Length: 294
Ligand SMILES: [Zn+2]
Ligand SMILES: [Zn+2]
Image 1 (cartoon, rainbow, N blue to C red):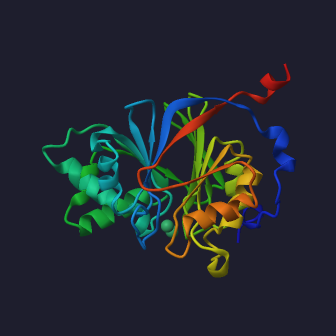
Image 2: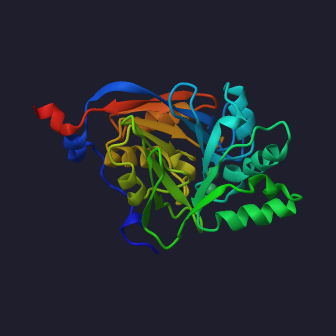
């Protein structure tokens, strides 16, 4: 078992972190777009996991997870497959990755305008894509020439510098290999996406001070599972993180989103929003703490 990062977070108020909170002075044009706010047990408005980070109005897309239905949801949101320049994967559960192969197949189509693509994820990503792609009939060839960027499962926290922004990650211990991701954008906006996770100190630390904490909230307390979050756990993580916005997502049918929001608010006094397929969330841009004291 891991060390500190596996211990539950018991901090129930934001008092300890009040000093680290910063004033929101503006919203950037970067957008976090929910493509799938549910689980493998899909419901209207809550499909399998998928998110798009759009840099600037009409800009390129980085997908975070790519579960079944993600690409359909993307075009339904007014976006295009050719805008995807990077896909970041949290773990290899089917509800988070299946549309990777739909994307590869699309890229083989003569009607697709090919462009550079980064595939980022846990160690073993390339081998996973190649093995599953072969089983699907050579689909993996749609990813010929893409750049794979894998994180070693032995790393506690790894930061991978990419040209446009800083990308950091931590192990969520949800499955054999599972990661949460954080992006810090040049505009000053930041987002942490939990992927699938239990109440993990390491994930809350990764989310420290972020603008948007997109946090899974799979189950209500009465059917809580250790490798997923309930509203109370998500709220405590958000308080520990001191994020500006807690965006609850990955709802199973037993988790009513409205109830999730109410119960998370008992543990987090910041802004809470509920993810739904197609919902868009602007990044709060914060002023550095030093600026407040001058
Ligand atoms: Zn999972
Ligand atoms: Zn999941």
